[in-house]
Amino acid sequence: MDKLGVWILPGAVVLIVAFGLVRRVPVFDAFLQGAKEGLSSSISILPTLVGLMMGVTMLGASGALDMVSSFLGPWAEKLGFPAQALPLALLRPFSGSGSTALAASLFETVHPDSFAGRVISVLMGSSETTFYAIAVYYGAVGIKKTRWTIPAALTGDVVSMAASAVVVLLWFPQPGV
Image 1 (cartoon, rainbow, N blue to C red):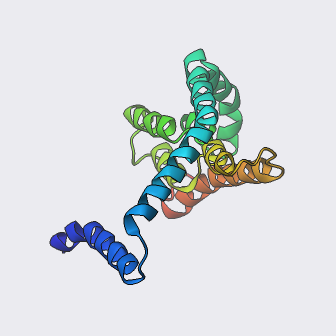
Image 2 (cartoon, rainbow, N blue to C red):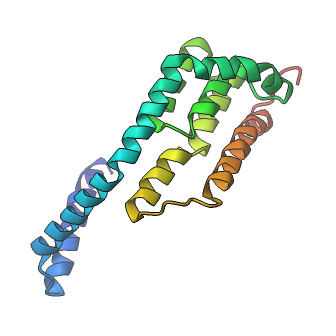
């Protein structure tokens, strides 16, 4: 089975090229045109991504994320969400790489098999980098007004945050809970 996995990607490329040749498509010209369009899309969304990355970096470096987490932590605990996972829940909609790094650092303070560690794991797998996705997809097609997208996506983020704690409690009952 391991040898099959090595050949899947090259096989797919060969099949695509062969299909194009059978259909008499100028494969190399089509590839160049697609690469050119991809490059122009990347350039058009670059300012949005730079602004988003700068904002995430400033949020973490300023201590604002820690301040908001410490303020909301007691209320999150009362609702059944571990306060240790709150910084991740707040950062996840903004940055995928930042939230991955934060999750790794959180696992240095909480055990991965603890309630908080499991909630962190489920949250990482069940939530989206909302603002990054909106910046990339809407920026690529030039949409300026997001209308209901951000409220709906943030509602999904809040639901995934609550559901991550509920799912962990259902699948891994805690002693005394």
